[in-house]
Image (cartoon, rainbow, N blue to C red):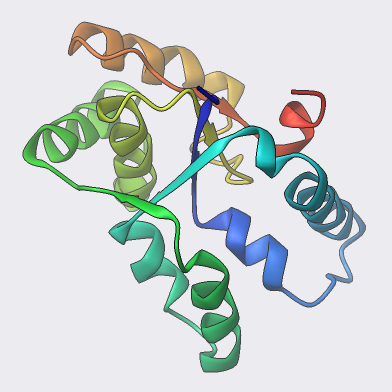
Length: 157
């Protein structure tokens, strides 16, 4: 069985966006495409309705590209345990209220026992200063937290 990866919304966003003028973002977009083309087949990929809802927002043309990319991937249910854990992560990991959907992404991945949560959201998810709190809340609730990482960190997997 392959390791499981929950794709947070930044992944399809980086895959389908025009190259950024910001050098760091452009490099991350390139790394994401490289991971997608060369490494994704080594994992079972999952999304949720939250990813689809977020991907559908913004520019209609860009949204269409993101949603097309996500067709066919297994969708994880957003259950009551996901909602409870998301609220616990938001408060316990001291995330700002505006990061409620970010906490829910982590909760969905934890409740559904994903091996990895792949993201470029380094403000609230792939953030070393928040990781300990996120992991502690998940474990206290009886869930093994996913390994939160960027595509760069899964390049050699």
